[in-house]
Length: 132
Image 1 (cartoon, rainbow, N blue to C red):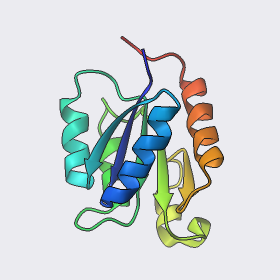
Image 2 (cartoon, rainbow, N blue to C red; image 1 turned 90 degrees about the vertical axis):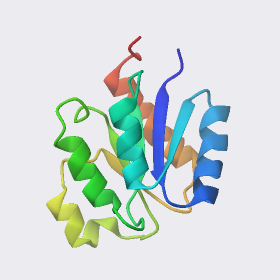
Image 3 (cartoon, one colour; image 1 turned 180 degrees about the vertical axis):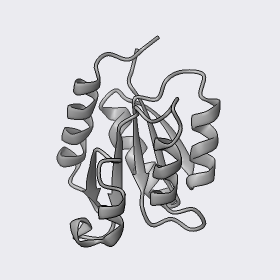
């Protein structure tokens, strides 16, 4: 069974690119156009999600708000989350301090494919095999 990744972003082109890269590596990709749709998919998922790629700067509900909702939900809190950002210095943002420990890594867009895949594979390896 392929590992399932939920990609939440409000940029259709980024979702298309992410899907192409991840599916080529054998991942099953579920995509959500924005935070509300992403949370809805998580609540209705009939199979476990192994990892979430979450954009920070989205219209409506931003990635930090989505992250907080995910981590406050007992059924979802264990899912690793990689934050995607167009900002080059995530460490300097005040939000990073507020949400420290809630996300498992970040990748700067436009990302280097091997860096993104490396982080994903490391987190999935730590988490173990997908559940049926």
